[in-house]
Amino acid sequence: MKFVIQRVKKASVTVDNEIIGRIQEGFLVLIGVAETDTKLIADKMIRKMIGLRIFQDESGKTNLALKDVNGELLLVSQFTLYADCKKGNRPSFTRSGNPVLAENLYEYIIKECKKSVPVVESGSFGADMKVELLNDGPFTVILDSEEICPPTHI
Image (cartoon, rainbow, N blue to C red; front, side, top):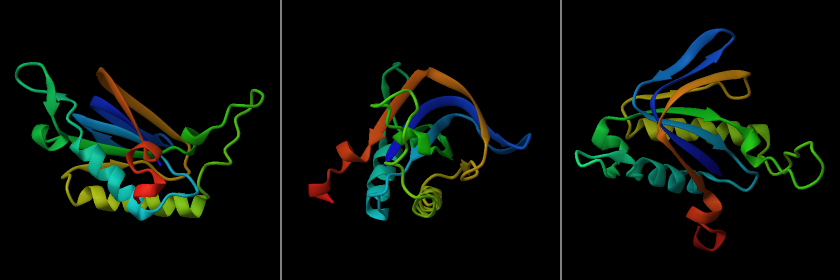
């Protein structure tokens, strides 16, 4: 599982010319699911993401977490995070989770985040989405489950 976390001042996602998700200060998170991902992996990734201290405190140091700034979440599925570009110029997506698994885990992540973050918005799984954001910093962090929770520790 991969999370591309962008600290934003605001972000939105549009489908068919209609805004379906919009947040103010917080994280825009692009979520990629691999075939080997599970709810246990998702739980560990969620805990790590929510605990990231990447907002500035009164001294200008990145020392505050999402909850400390009443931050919001916009979660967007993005299977292309598992693009394999080793051969040729056309990416392969064989490492991406099958759509049923990926959608189930994406919905699970949304549900679990809502338990601890007051404002959680989302995109539409599998839809052609347009994402707009005002990146703050810019500050972008990539969480990869292979680093966060290696198979021997799951």
